[in-house]
Image 1 (cartoon, rainbow, N blue to C red):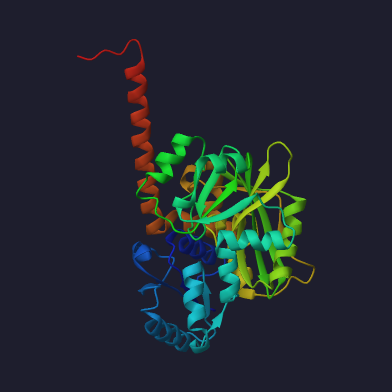
Image 2: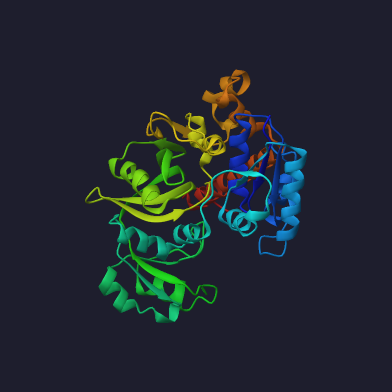
Length: 376
């Protein structure tokens, strides 16, 4: 049975990958991460969690960990699941004695992980993107000039942050001055300004092996569900981007559908696995399993453009309980991985507690605002 080393800094991405692995195998799986993944010591989705730093100071230790694991588990596969994991793996690639699932080369990674470089790549190849300009530090931003060029609202964001960190949708001068100019915490030094696309989010996920598309999915969030939908433009993009960049590995692209025109605009790329990964697994397309195989589909790229999956915890989905208990296939295995793992149960308990607090506050606010509410 093949074993796995999962290398990554982002807890949410690492957990999604571990759940995707458990949906198709009970193989020995070890996580190599930093403080953010420390809580995975409680998880039964991995055999062990090894601690390193991703800033270069642990590179020598990382090489030793990987090569010892490869010696102990012949045929093991390394999965670098986020950008920090990919950068670390690329730095010491020539010294690793283990099979590695597809990852982008260093220059390609930086092109797709930087919002300004991604915009330039798309513009160069004729892919539709919002009007965007690079400014650098915030002291180069002028509200009147930006409002005239991009109209209001417009978007200000750093080129090199993930998870919407630093993204500001500016709706007024006051919003601009308090949220950015006079905000001492807003200290990013690589900013772009982008035209705001009024519309809905839509995402493209793909796996490419040396520039050849192997699998893709198009998804939208609808309430508490992730729905997989057809979209001709993004299906074309799924073919074009790997071919134009010789891309190797997985990628998740954020896009927007313009409410007025129906046109799709590419917003940014994430050259790594993504937190909503298990939704496609539930619908039959496992990007982790396909990455491990790293082969082109004989009948063309695998695609997922129909179906859907709930993003809620399985315990809150009565319709899934039968599969949770009796399905021996990948759906049942995934549901059990998301339900009974001690780490996942802890996260569920915290979410349930937070939901209860919000509900109590809402009820209290409603009572106090009611004409019949009186204090003693």
